[in-house]
Amino acid sequence: MKQPMPVLREPVVKRRGGRKLKIVLLLLFIVVLSVLFFNSSISKVSRITVEGERFISADTIQKTAGVSLGDAFFGFTERSIERRLRTNPAIEQVKVTKKFPGDVTIHVQEYAAVAYELSAKGEIMAILSSGTSVSATNGDFVVDKPLLSGWKQNDPVKKALSKQLAAIPAEQLSDLSEIRPDPTKAYPDRIRIYTRTRFEVITAISVLAEKLETLNAVTETQEPGKVTMLLADTYEPYINDSSENMESAEKESTQ
Image (cartoon, rainbow, N blue to C red; front, side):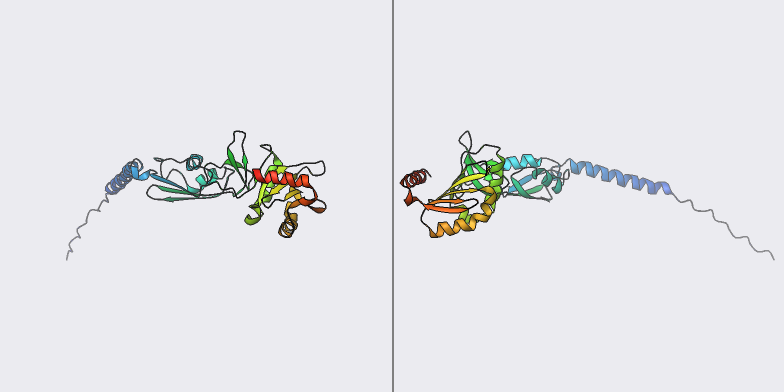
């Protein structure tokens, strides 16, 4: 008995071309969307907020950061802006935050002001703890720091002085009225300090930190006078010298 031959089916040909076409169309769609997105306003920087500035203007900070309204939001990173801003010697710390869509916040912390001085043009300058001089016209100027007089613009001793002043407590620093350079061969960093409590102090920047307790003890227990704090510490009240007393009174009237 003959058995019927089974019907042979033709192999199904897989159509791979359709799948490839779908992938190509999907990629093309993504490219078109990307082009439209990066050319739309939603992908641009729409707001820049600067916080924490005191002496440096917001415009200066923004220019240093190198970011402007309309820049590509994804064209830079927070760290890249922070690196640029740290090149400014007046900025101690900086934090940049990006928030989609379009918001960039720059928060800076400037070095603390430890003194003031007048520039050659008569402009009030703030001396920061880093030794940098910046215009004080942009900040809330309060005479709670000493005035530096008679210093050269790029004097390295002045920079060392600013670092020492940064370590002095605010209450004691506010009592210092004026600081002048008074160098000698033995002490090239010698300075002369006038206080608002009418003391005249001769000391050196290199020993100022270790002499602060001595100065506090004198100003809190003695009458106004002349204090020398170098290799040895001496104190002379003004009443022992009428000429010195008159000179002190004249200085006090001009401060």
